[in-house]
Length: 239
Image 1 (cartoon, rainbow, N blue to C red):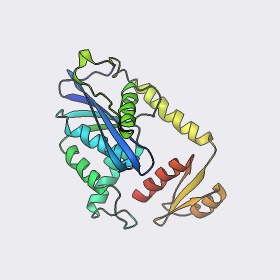
Image 2: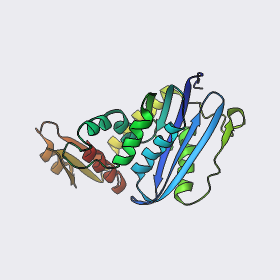
Image 3: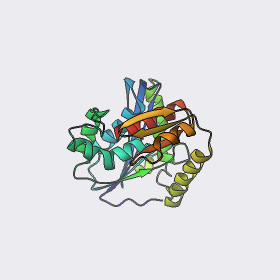
């Protein structure tokens, strides 16, 4: 079980949307040495990425601890918070292709709540048995559907999920490797490339390879579904 010191806190976050855009929900579960606080909310017209960022913003706003470990299944959130956001701000909230940064308002909010905090951003695979992630997924999904998630706020000793901090670092590493292996062996829905700032979608690897081969700074990635394709396009456009 992960140990929490007096100046520490753990936050689990997740976002969900029914359609992209569509009705959405966000969730955060905050664990400190004495208490657990569950947060959740919804928007009628939003995207999954907006809900992922919103969850982190709301969670970090409520935490006063100096040292925070934040678990999320969104690589978009982690990359944005740890790398992209600083370049975007420096460049007047423009991407490398001079386009307006998507979700600028929430990225600005996130920068503000990150200030002065020591945050360890940690990726967890979705739906792989991480208790805090599963609870956040439940809250976010219920919220997106307009339901009542019945949020808990109180003493850790009375919280229903007493194993929420049973997080094995080795298991997290295995999850990353497993996700990577599954993606590598899975059938492709499409391929996405970015060359000289322009993002394109390809229906074959041969077409994608011809575009990126020998091009300095080129990006490319296989998508596994229409939704996955959209996430990759958003990711590449944001860089």
